[in-house]
Amino acid sequence: FLHLEKGEKSPDKKSMMELPPVTSQENGLSQILRLVLKELSLFYSRDVNGVSLLYDLLHSPWLQALLKVYECLQEYIMKKPIPVLSQAQALSCEVVELLREVPQSPEVRELRQVLKAKHFQGATIKRHEITGDIMVARIIHGGLADRSGLLYAGDKLVEVNGISVEGLEPEQVIHILAMSHGTIMFKVVPVSDRPINNQTTVYVRTMAKYCPWEDPIIPCADAGLPFRKGEILQIVDRNDSLWWQARKVSDFGACAGLIPSNHLLKRKQREFWWSQPFQPHSCLKSTTYGEEFAGYGHQFFIAGFRRSMRLCRRKSHTSQLPAYTHCYNALGAPYEEVVRYQRHPSDKHRLIVLVGPSGVGVNELRRRLIETDPNHFQSAVPHTTRSKKSYEEDGREYHYVSKETFESLVYGHRMLEYGEYKGNLYGTSVDAVRKVLDEGKVCVMDLEPQSIQVARTHELKPYVIFIKPSTLNHMRQSRKNARIITDYYVNIKFKDEDLQEMEELAKKMETQFGQFFDQVIVNDSLQEACAELLTAVQQAQDEPQWVPATWICSDTEPP
Ligand SMILES: Nc1ncnc2c1ncn2[C@@H]1O[C@H](COP(=O)(O)OP(=O)(O)OP(=O)(O)O)[C@@H](O)[C@H]1O
Image (cartoon, rainbow, N blue to C red; front, side, top):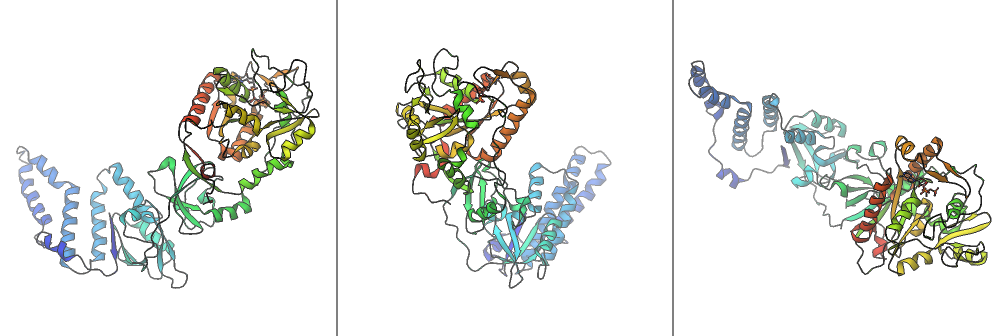
């Protein structure tokens, strides 16, 4: 289907010798076929056994098309050295007409689409700024042109299907291609220095979303690769400093598409990315906080299930504090280089972080996970500046520290997350998490999404699971008997607006922090969500996962 003619090169003499002798058009196979069909038609009406079958077979359009193509190719060989493009064009039209009535196989349909795609055969064209020539701007990795190995970026386009492209606008050339049926022939003058792509491929996680059709500066939107936040891309070509080529690891069969380079995307980000500030959850706005909750009413005590921790998060002033500034720095990198990592059985476990809007069931799921095997799963013991109660034990419910000690932990960046509640400070330290991991256990904690960045370190290698609410209708059913934990004394039923708020907040969290989520679990049926959580946690520990390259090799440069 794709014929590429390069410059003025004559046909290969050796291949000519090996071909059967030339048949002239008049005595050609089509002529013989016509005669045979004429003979057969005489017997057709007499109902001679098998004649109708033979007639239909020889009369089929595909056989006639095949003969036509064969004869025409013989003709081209005769008229050496230059193939006759006008004839080729006429031939392709005739053959297409012949085959038009024949139902097409899916493969033929697909091929037609490829051939008619706006970035023809996986290449883009542009007008040379100085000479005005139509040039091949880039070859799309894995596309038809790339696989043919015949077209290169920088080749000058001279003719398309016999029509000179001199003086034409690139759009007009595309129009000719779009109007062409079947075979498309290009006449090109090859670029003198063919580029060699000797770059190593790099894998990245996208930290922003991108839609080529909404990008006014992309050279060819049809050749663009749209992506969501958090997708893993394989970057296959970085020759152009502004436009790279990449493909999704989730769709390896597809050919590559254009994506803005790191440099370009950063520039764009400065213009319009992350313009919406994160809205903190307001579910508890009108709640009067009571006494903090201890023990959570369960048979055994699990550290880290402090209601005060969750309540103070919502009132926290964390974004003003130094520990949280990393978050904004990291958002500046549009692509994060990633590598495949599988924890060695002798390595420490990865930290499991659960994230979700208030009331979605983060703590319920965490508690149930720990209950499945309390010797294997554990929470980290938080710190607090409030005084110890008579029934409490230092290092079990909390680490009880002075305000000065707590603040020194904060300013020393030792706190993963912290906040103030009723005049006391509460927080979880890196050391508390490390203690669980050092004991060979899996540390499971919940974090506000703004704090994920702080936990994303080479040491903790957090695996982040987003707990997502199901649809409103489902939640109205499933949360009938559930209680929102807002206060020590009053556990109120979920109202419709609480559920709506949960849904809205979940959307915002996904939009703003979705790039950090390794897994998303919809908490519809508690039992199913628990089973999914257990599987996800096991996969995080025992199966290969994409992690930032800096966690594995500390000297990795950003792509
Ligand atoms: N899938 C579910 N089906 C029914 N009830 C659920 C489900 N998930 C959680 N719940 C209930 O919803 C209530 C709130 O859950 P939970 O306390 O775990 O929320 P949370 O995400 O930790 O939010 P917060 O931090 O505000 O407490 C609890 O009563 C819990 O038992």
